[in-house]
Image (cartoon, rainbow, N blue to C red; front, side, top):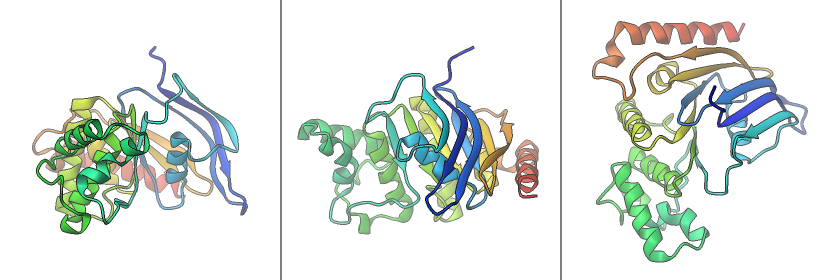
Length: 249
């Protein structure tokens, strides 16, 4: 059996105000996997992502990487694009490399390549205010990818976008995953999005946050044309919806 990229065993998280965000979470993530974490607000999805990113520490339990990640091995995409308003798309994308003192010519070349990878070639000099919401999120994804991370953590990045833009970004993200092989952990409260994107869906229940069920999605990736309207997709969404409802009872 292949050694997991990262293993969480008995992970719990308590906050100073007395809130228990997570309780006894056991989870293994394989290298190259596309994992979706599905659950309602307040079930600890974002907390789990922050633990994986090293932005927080568990109160109990162990989180063990097969190989400890370096400072540029994990890319994080937040719910908001959080771009510097005075900097163009190229400079926003290159920011992690600038902070790492990467020479200017190299960081600009890598930033331009990252923007091209998310479909923004030709928009390098555009300011955030000149871009649509979907394009700003593409810049945010490019910024997370510019360091060539092994793991891409995404915290409901498409939640505020319209449905058509969201669907397009879902397809582009699957194509990027197939092209790069990066491990993706994607947090969402959308049943349809989790089933469309992931090869495995972890359904979480709240108060305290815990894993209620695990669903394996047997579908080719990237998804074939017509998958969203297929009977198989509808059945998978129904299974995920039932699992989510069971976790709330």
